[in-house]
Image (cartoon, rainbow, N blue to C red; front, side):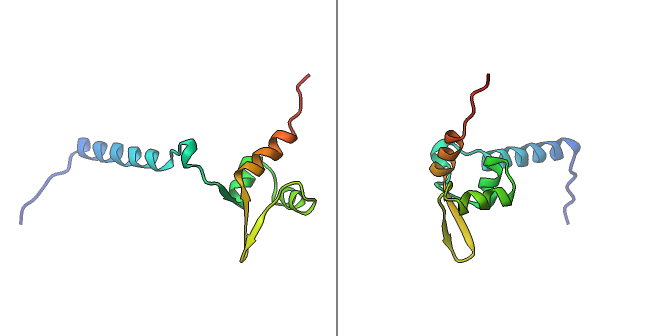
Length: 90
């Protein structure tokens, strides 16, 4: 049986490799952005509560599609709602 020693430098290199892989996985270019978003994505984009998002659906401000129990929103529609509700800073 052969014994191998792992040094702190080995752990440091492993950590750097893992961090680099995670960063690559999290980075998305504009062409890789999802066209259809789930509720959690939209809540994050709008920084609103689930109740506010439901109101946007109910009053027709934000169109959506529902398949099974999952609600989907077009990214373009979410950006349009943001743009239409833009306030001018005085």
